[in-house]
Image (cartoon, rainbow, N blue to C red; front, side):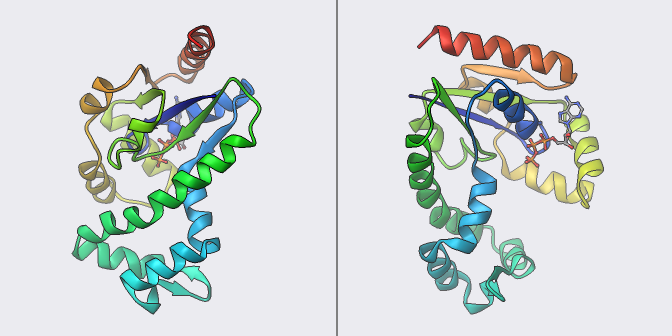
Length: 194
Ligand code: ATP
């Protein structure tokens, strides 16, 4: 079964695009959502995060996000170390999930597909892009956030140019109707290339 990676910068519209593939009957694995669940349910992740951050990493069985965010804010290496704990668990969880799917291909949607090297294991990569100002506008509308917070996340992600160089398909997600057309075109192309 073909494994297709779907990525893009914060606010580009990855989840929106993933939903369009889902509407075509393609199984979609949203890595960030699965990671959030695994951080609570996986004993291995829990143990390793407590080893990394201390007992305060969890509060009443839930991830203590403000505490972890404050540590990462002061030392960015903690983000990499946290990702190094979660990434292998996500990779094996995705593998098991994939085995249960019955479709010509599956989509793995992840914000940091390139940054953590997991793109190397995927057969096809789709990158979603949008102009920076539009991404910021969308995120300010969707989340309780600030332009400064968005910019600091953007700085830690690969540039669109770097991602595009390593992608088979690029969707410039500005108008939703056009995006839907692009999704259908790519879907047909992937089926044809099998
Ligand atoms: P994140 O990196 O934060 O997970 P994302 O890349 O998955 O974000 P989405 O959540 O899909 O992005 O989109 C961000 C916001 O912009 C959402 O509120 C979504 O509804 C909106 N949006 C996405 N694409 C479009 C579009 N083409 N037209 C209008 N609104 C859009």
